[in-house]
Amino acid sequence: MRIEPRQILQDSETKITIVWSDESKSEFDALQLRRACPCAKCVDEWTGEKILKDEQIDQKLKIEDIKLVGRYALNILFSDGHETGIYSFKYLYELSKESED
Ligand SMILES: [Zn+2]
View 1 (cartoon, rainbow, N blue to C red):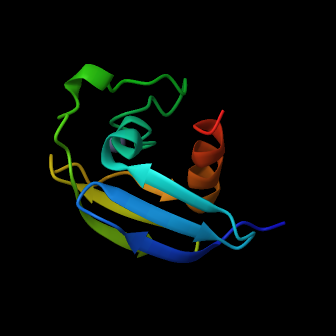
View 2 (cartoon, rainbow, N blue to C red):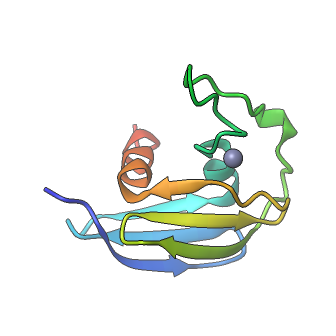
Protein backbone atom coordinates (compact mmCIF):
# COMPACT_ATOMS: atom_id res chain seq x y z
CA MET A 1 0.00 0.00 0.00
CA ARG A 2 1.12 3.46 -0.82
CA ILE A 3 1.51 5.65 2.23
CA GLU A 4 0.55 9.24 1.75
CA PRO A 5 -0.38 11.96 4.15
CA ARG A 6 -4.02 12.86 4.25
CA GLN A 7 -3.34 15.88 6.40
CA ILE A 8 -0.26 17.73 7.55
CA LEU A 9 -0.78 19.96 10.55
CA GLN A 10 1.67 22.26 12.25
CA ASP A 11 0.47 22.06 15.85
CA SER A 12 2.99 24.46 17.33
CA GLU A 13 6.42 25.91 16.70
CA THR A 14 7.94 22.56 17.53
CA LYS A 15 5.37 19.97 16.54
CA ILE A 16 3.76 18.65 13.41
CA THR A 17 1.16 15.95 13.06
CA ILE A 18 0.67 13.87 9.96
CA VAL A 19 -2.51 11.90 9.38
CA TRP A 20 -1.72 9.08 6.99
CA SER A 21 -3.81 7.42 4.33
CA ASP A 22 -4.05 4.32 6.54
CA GLU A 23 -5.75 6.49 9.21
CA SER A 24 -2.81 6.32 11.58
CA LYS A 25 -1.45 9.53 13.03
CA SER A 26 2.15 10.50 13.71
CA GLU A 27 3.52 13.35 15.76
CA PHE A 28 6.96 14.68 15.13
CA ASP A 29 8.88 17.28 17.03
CA ALA A 30 11.50 19.63 15.68
CA LEU A 31 14.43 17.97 17.42
CA GLN A 32 13.44 14.51 16.28
CA LEU A 33 13.12 15.68 12.68
CA ARG A 34 16.35 17.65 12.77
CA ARG A 35 18.20 14.63 14.18
CA ALA A 36 16.82 12.47 11.39
CA CYS A 37 17.62 14.96 8.63
CA PRO A 38 18.55 12.92 5.57
CA CYS A 39 20.35 15.67 3.61
CA ALA A 40 23.92 15.41 2.35
CA LYS A 41 25.19 17.75 5.07
CA CYS A 42 23.81 15.54 7.81
CA VAL A 43 24.30 12.09 6.33
CA ASP A 44 27.17 10.92 4.13
CA GLU A 45 25.61 10.21 0.76
CA TRP A 46 27.94 7.35 -0.03
CA THR A 47 28.28 5.50 3.23
CA GLY A 48 24.96 6.47 4.80
CA GLU A 49 26.89 7.42 7.92
CA LYS A 50 25.47 10.21 10.03
CA ILE A 51 27.64 13.34 10.04
CA LEU A 52 25.40 15.47 12.21
CA LYS A 53 26.06 15.19 15.92
CA ASP A 54 22.97 15.25 18.11
CA GLU A 55 24.72 17.56 20.58
CA GLN A 56 25.20 20.16 17.83
CA ILE A 57 21.47 20.64 17.58
CA ASP A 58 19.92 23.64 19.28
CA GLN A 59 17.68 22.25 22.03
CA LYS A 60 15.23 25.09 21.49
CA LEU A 61 14.92 24.36 17.80
CA LYS A 62 11.69 25.32 16.09
CA ILE A 63 10.05 24.51 12.80
CA GLU A 64 9.82 27.70 10.79
CA ASP A 65 8.21 26.40 7.65
CA ILE A 66 7.07 23.23 5.94
CA LYS A 67 6.86 22.93 2.18
CA LEU A 68 5.57 20.15 0.03
CA VAL A 69 8.03 18.73 -2.46
CA GLY A 70 6.00 17.37 -5.32
CA ARG A 71 3.74 14.65 -4.05
CA TYR A 72 6.33 12.63 -2.25
CA ALA A 73 8.13 14.65 0.38
CA LEU A 74 8.32 17.54 2.81
CA ASN A 75 11.01 20.15 3.00
CA ILE A 76 11.40 21.56 6.48
CA LEU A 77 12.97 24.88 7.40
CA PHE A 78 14.29 24.91 10.95
CA SER A 79 15.01 27.92 13.15
CA ASP A 80 18.75 27.16 12.97
CA GLY A 81 18.56 28.00 9.24
CA HIS A 82 18.86 24.42 8.10
CA GLU A 83 16.58 23.83 5.13
CA THR A 84 18.18 21.22 2.93
CA GLY A 85 16.40 18.20 4.36
CA ILE A 86 13.90 16.51 2.06
CA TYR A 87 11.84 14.09 4.10
CA SER A 88 10.01 11.66 1.90
CA PHE A 89 6.64 10.53 3.22
CA LYS A 90 7.91 6.98 3.27
CA TYR A 91 10.86 8.06 5.40
CA LEU A 92 8.63 9.98 7.81
CA TYR A 93 6.25 7.08 8.07
CA GLU A 94 9.07 4.71 8.89
CA LEU A 95 10.54 7.21 11.34
CA SER A 96 7.26 7.43 13.20
CA LYS A 97 6.92 3.67 13.40
CA GLU A 98 10.47 3.40 14.70
CA SER A 99 9.92 5.85 17.54
CA GLU A 100 6.84 3.94 18.69
CA ASP A 101 8.82 0.92 19.79
ZN1 LIG B 1 20.39 18.12 6.97
